[in-house]
Image 1 (spheres, rainbow, N blue to C red):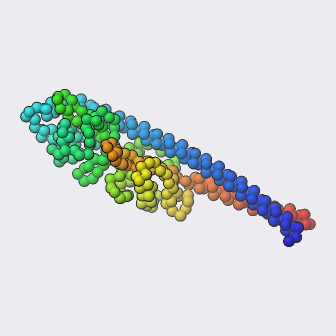
Image 2: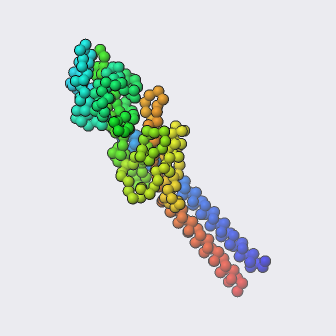
Image 3: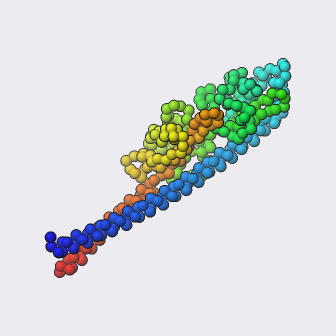
Length: 316
């Protein structure tokens, strides 16, 4: 190998290694910056979700407390404590009071846990409520999540229990509102982020149980919800927050980084009722990385060409 070729090789290798090192360093810095920004935006959205959860919970608590303190509820509780009580008289009370207080769910239960009146499923009148648990303990607690059985489905709701204690035996008011698309739509989502709620009503993943903040668009319709199943199942199995990248297509720019957060109900086993999914698009990161890569290739190629020209001049 001639001296000229050796010098050309040294120049080319030096330029290539220098450009590669700079490109790698810039990519690492870009990735760290993206992850830091993504974590900050996710934390802000989780905090927003918690604030909205607390706000709506307080709203439900005020409405349920208002019902518990109302004259119809007090008269019912007094009558049910009497020797000749006829609970059938109050069959329609829950429905009318749910409408007037803008609640999706409302039931009156006696001190045995038997349903006296139900707004969401009137036919449950006279049956025990096996889902609610310790009414006495819950009546002193804040809002909680619960899956409510309906006549033709099951709904996730934010509930509060309050006692009507005007006689020896209390009557309990159990009221709530749905945790659904309307709730998610109240969140102020940053650009390139979205939030989904998976309602854990079945032992197996079902796309029908996945709720988005808005109705499906043409873009959403081509994204198979089944790709979220492994992340949801991992959050359920590990009982902790977990993150993972979901690849929607062969194009890395379509990838989304999701954070899955389990949401549990009350009771002895604290059942897993839902999984909150916060997605962050990786498109901006992927496109920026591609531009940096292309720039590095351009600079590297230019450096090698320059080295060849310089060596040509030296030879001349």
